[in-house]
Image 1 (spheres, helix red, strand yellow):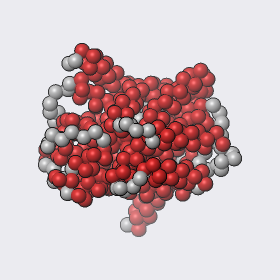
Image 2: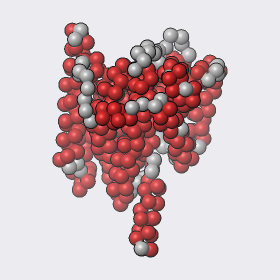
Image 3: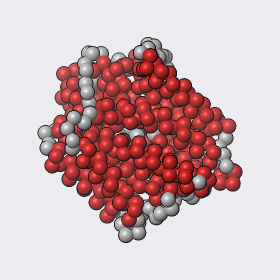
Image 4: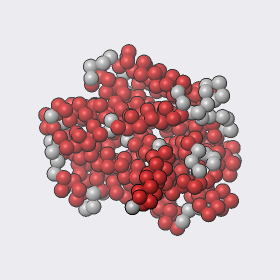
Length: 414
């Protein structure tokens, strides 16, 4: 018994030491852009949208594990490997696409912070620049391990969505059944929103971030199975949170046929049905999601810039050693803050479009994951198995078909 206890204690300590890449990447997918997309999806389709959560969780787990495994075995970032295997021209095109998509996502996250600040009676034109500047200097001046602990603290606040869901008093049996039994018609609008939900959960930036973050954490091949466990558990956790967010919105806003234009309005709209505390919980969640999302997505672009073009870039290096890395981070945050300060910026419209683009960009990222993860000279015995390849190819085909139907349906007015 004593030996068994020592064995499992040692195993749990290993897992806790390796925690970070999977859970931070997965939970950060539920950023302000994600919260807005989930809110719009549930307010438009109610429990019907829940049918995509289980396959989405499986795909998130598989693709994130592939990205993490590549970094552990190759000891290089995904962007590094794309440049080496596909050339500088491809690296430039990929970085340009990633920069554009990420910048839009960062804008939606900063916009989410702005909306949450206004919701709590704070002047965003004063507090928003201070928060963004504080986040930047914290990242520049703080060590990797401390930054990771800060991310964990932020993740803890996501429990607010679970509280909101329970306070909304939904029909849990109906909500659970909707995870397995489809309802309603798969209209082009439903497919469009579904792709946006997939695009905000299984993000292109997430594939690059987990890869670079694992490399920065220096996880060894000996611990690859523990990393896999952490990634899989994180995928389940993040989509459990998505489930609670959608349930809270479906049972209040959708069932009462309310029209909302942003996630902050959702916080106000659910109060008559679920109480003030539920609304406050949603507001706090939106603020935390915006803070976590804007930093992590901006870091993804900074990591990618360093890797695509062969510059030094790491959270464990100071500003002087990684000037371009931290400068890329700063440029994105400044642009996003300036854009969000403009009037008439709609978080909902930006986030849905950004996440739809993210969704249709996924097959491109999956192609590179497929090619690299099956390259025996890079991966050796750790290359993909048939199931993992089937998931990458199958998901790409489904996304491309759904995208085509949603676009054609939108043009023809189906």
